Length: 109
Length: 113
Image (cartoon, rainbow over all chains, first blue to last red; front, side, top):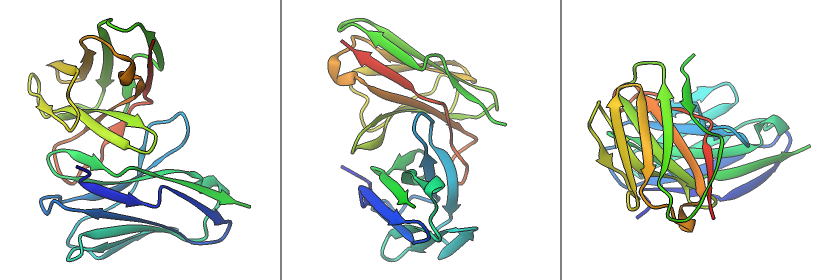
């Protein structure tokens, strides 16, 4: 049973465009929702995170939108750059950290 | 900087062998995790530990066991390796639970032949 559902599986965006990745969760006990970025050959690294009492968090070009009632959250990457090409994982945390299935983002020049 | 070190980047083992994957963190983190990463399936939790000698099953513990004798070290054991355990294995650690960042190692690419 996938506790955190992520879509799309892959995404191709033009340089300068907006990349949007969506996630949905089921367990209301989750109390922290991080996004991780993974480059080939590397382990995932924290990109940005949000608590469920906040509806939006922005760090530079990266924004998380959080809808607690719908149990959904999304990552928006503004002005997407080729260097953003990576795999992105949403996650939900309580006693353990549960990850989505990942989105492979390719930003083309 | 927090460092999570996995002992091997690449391993090739034979079916039926007992395999040990080692992970060491240097930040005195309480929680440690083992995940396997497969294309299209994301990161799936095998086991986690919230303290020395404590362990909890994750979502896919079958065929695996773990050991945490010291706070900084968390070992994943494949009792009898099978070809369906060919995967990328990732270790992570974090301080406490909930609103804390998990730090990952570089991963171990295990191939079972």
